[in-house]
Length: 90
Image (cartoon, rainbow, N blue to C red):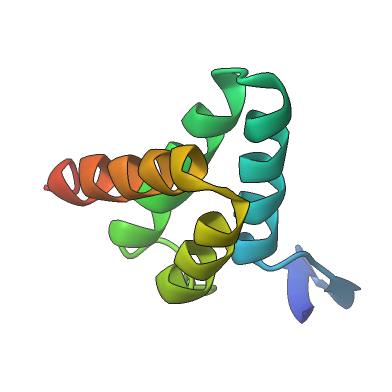
């Protein structure tokens, strides 16, 4: 997606990855290597979104469909991270 940014007095546009695409990429990487880095990063993205700090909200349904396509273990990880981040939002 194309986003507009402001750095002091300069306004510029740049292409940015959607948060969903970043999360799906991290789920794929986790499936391949089981590194704890990826779930930690996903959790941080979810917390940021659930706290209302992001203007690019995560399409949870899209990520869930992609996680389901990646297998039961990936779907379970995704659902666990969403629940954990949702409960911690206070």
